[in-house]
Length: 137
Image 1 (tube, rainbow, N blue to C red):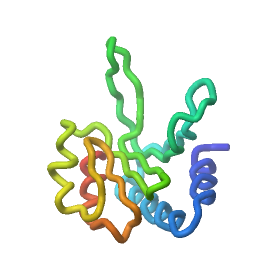
Image 2 (image 1 turned 120 degrees about the vertical axis):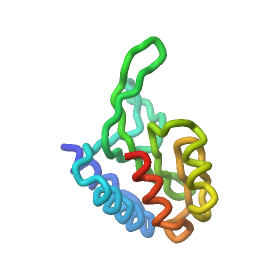
Image 3 (image 1 turned 45 degrees about the vertical axis):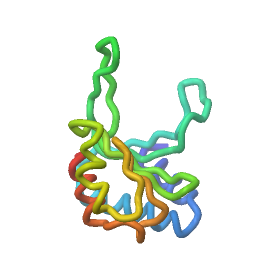
Image 4 (image 1 turned 180 degrees about the vertical axis):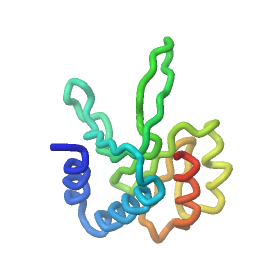
């Protein structure tokens, strides 16, 4: 199964109304970055153990790990969780940028150094969320 098929299977597996909201966010992110590389991480580690929720990724960035090794990863991530939806914005200049720039205006969401978590789309200002996504792209 290719990445697009895995993404579609993941989206289809989500209950409504979360499925519709994830599809809307996926559509918006793809519109903001139509040429971005797509990723699908199933949430398991190299041994097959579940370590996180499955997530969709958009774009590519290379990070330098401790010891000088590098690793490719996505720029924007999207996942469903038990409390709603999380959007990951990776590679910002510092861990306070997301919270200080978008936290006060995004609406009813928890904003950390790299994650915007909310219960449903109606809880957030979509223009501010898109601005945060653009910052990560």
